[in-house]
Image (cartoon, rainbow, N blue to C red; front, side, top):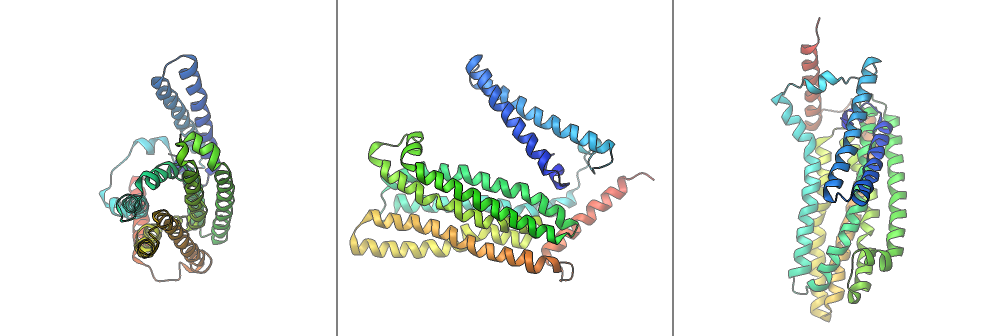
Amino acid sequence: MSYFIRSEGYNTYVMACGIAANLINIALDALFIIVFKMGVLGGVVATVIGWFFNTFAYIIYIVVKDRKQKTWLSIKSLFKFKFNKKLLGPIFSLGLGGFLRTFGIGFSFIVMNLLIANSHFAMPEYFQFFWAKGQPIVSLFLISIFGINDGARSLFSYNYTLRKFDRCKKVYLWTMLIALLYSIIVYVFVAATANNIWVWILNVDSDKVEGTATFIRIISLRILAVSLVINSLLAFQGANDVEKTIFSSAFENFISFIIVIPISYGIAYGVYKTTGNKEIVNWIIVGAFVFNCLLSSLFLMGFSYWFVFKKLEKIDQTKLSWSRKIEHKFFEMAQQAELLETPY
């Protein structure tokens, strides 16, 4: 229901409900686990109550707005759902970009693990250890950046649908600024605390503390890089441009990755043959992984900026691409279905 509500431009309400639900969850976790000694069951009950509150708040929103005739949603329409197989194609096409992004991250991680664990110059006892300790930190903060995109995308889509392109540009720029400021603050914090707080939290062995801290500082640069690319997902997904969404989702972990990483492997192998220094060579591979993220982010940021500021306002005058034909077909079928259900 949160996606439906946000699509109508009420992001703040959804955000407030989510924050309140999480605070309730945390408070009840402490109550059930610490005070009542319920263990794992207490955590489960707290989560169920927190998200029940969230769902109930959404239902209240729909009921109140429906009575005031300020929403297209209704409780009846949520439960009286008619499956239309003709909508499956457009829905899967619009969601393919998200699938490719997630699958691509998994693919790149597998390749990197193979390189640092099974190559001629591998030092898995160190670099695979560093990877296992450092990546969860990056993933933790990247989720927040993608959350910024998730919240801004519905606002972008709302204004795109109304053809308020100036507002789309403002959403694009503000999202970029917020994501960049967030990533800078996070990186400074992570880099400054890498050799004390994080190695303590991650329970790092004393002989690997320095290497783990260095790895965390290097791999966390991806947080800065991703903050630059988040706008491409915002723009292309927000405008329902399937073609560009698929391209941007696949660029870092497939297109750019299969060029940068083999080249870096060749350079690393040459350095290894010349110097025999395995440690430097492994740092080259890790650095190349971060460089690939930065390179693809800068390219996609430029591409999305051109799309929003040059292409978007002329979107209705340009020839329909195959992805926009899917979009138009989707809305035509949805409108026809609504007309069939409307009593006269």
